[in-house]
Length: 266
Image (cartoon, rainbow, N blue to C red; front, top):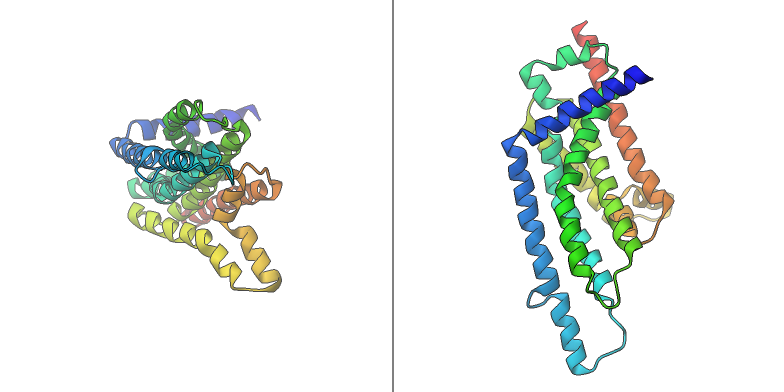
């Protein structure tokens, strides 16, 4: 067990260091921060932002129904972040294994004493940690802005919303890692991951057009439905299980993909 943990830490540190040493990763983070900052200001303080809408209601003497600006802002902003993540996460995951194939190091990795699961988990956690690092500045200015909210923002809504964002990221990165293990083209891996995630994003619309158990089953597979549940401050264990299932599925398929690659080279 100690050996497995040491191997996991080694892969995790290697992957995380590769992100922080990559200029391209900083470009991705910069674009993410720029866009999220723009939408933050637009949603909160723009001409049609929530603060202006609340001020207009006060001027007109409208008190019913009461408006929770902090809750509305968190819902809108977290929804915006999930849309940005739809584009950012496939880019973060595209090189997890594709770069190994391109450099010719995947064969060394596949034939090493390290188990495929440990390697896949280390790579996934490295990518997820980098994404969480990208979220930290956003948490800071959200906390500053919401500290002045009246009524005050509910901590559980903010906590569950960002937990949902992290779970969403883990699921997408895990599936993207599997796709990355199938090709040596990072661009193709990013495109295929985006297509898969987009399908899981809009599968809710398909489910609404179907009746019976098939429609209900598809609704449970929807990324956006399960994510929205958490951003509303509702802790639904089934939503957490769905995201964790996607994570485990991605790890399993990746491990099988590398095992097949190892078999081909043996």
